Image 1 (tube, each protein chain N blue to C red):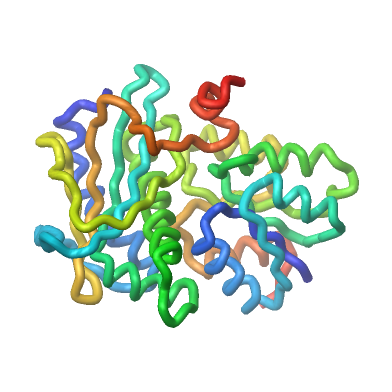
Image 2: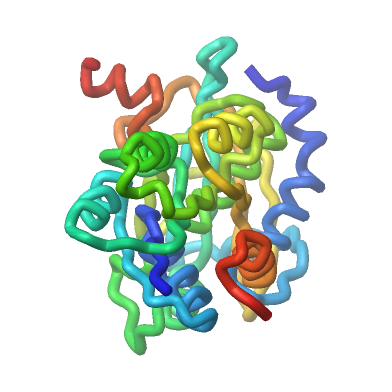
Amino acid sequence: MQALVVDDSRVMRTILTKLLTNLNFDVVQAGDGAEALAALDAGARPEVALVDWNMPVMDGLTFIKKVRQNPEYRDVVLMMVTTESEQNNIVRALAAGAHEYVIKPFTDEVIAEKLEMLGLIER
Amino acid sequence: MIDPAELAAAQPDLEMLLVEMIASVLGEQAEPTAEPLPAAVGLAVSRLVIQDPQDGSFLGVDVRAEGNLITTLAATLLGVAEPAPDDMLDVIAELGNIAAGNVKSLLCHNGQLSLPAPQLAFEHEGDSPDAIRAGASLLGNVMELVVMPLHSADAKTRWPSGSAQHSAEVGV
């Protein structure tokens, strides 16, 4: 299975990549929403994308909207992973098409639980 | 504008936030400390700004740590034997981002959070009298979280794509 990690922080991409690799995902990384869209346009077909909100070039909310607008990407499960923790932002992300929402800082267990709930892993 | 009394009352919450962030992100046990950062050592500093949409006021959020602590953390987090300055900047930037996001939830609901502006410095300028500091000790070093009202966002502040501030910056 493939996962796409979209975060402008190299540290966060490294942390999430390590976590997802341990859960048997092949991981593709992108530094912002535009890079992530380019990866999808180039043929990447991840089962799940973990997406930060605040990024330069293209933010995570815009990325999620664009992915949801394209029927080719309808099977990609979208998980927002962000420091934005206000209720209205969670509602905005879910309304835009995110399936799950994780607030930083998170533990490995939280991410694994969400992936399990989404039917992407079995433990 | 956040009331200075409200900011001061949040000090214990800021301390808890810092300790919990260190445990979650770095996997290290930290203890609250009133000990300041040592003078005249290399520092890594991450500054983020939160703008209140109601009145346009600004809150600055700094995470600061000794350079040797960030070097150790960068080696662990990024898996590199000898972290370069860019590695250290990445680490302090993300710590600042996580801390500031949580400060926003605590003190400035619905505020707009900037992107982190990290830097390596020999020392930092003194804080304003209304700055509130929380400190934590880990691995024999000190990390601190400082929250302070600002008159304006400084020139280094960058706003995320999609924010009103970014649109204003680029003239959209």
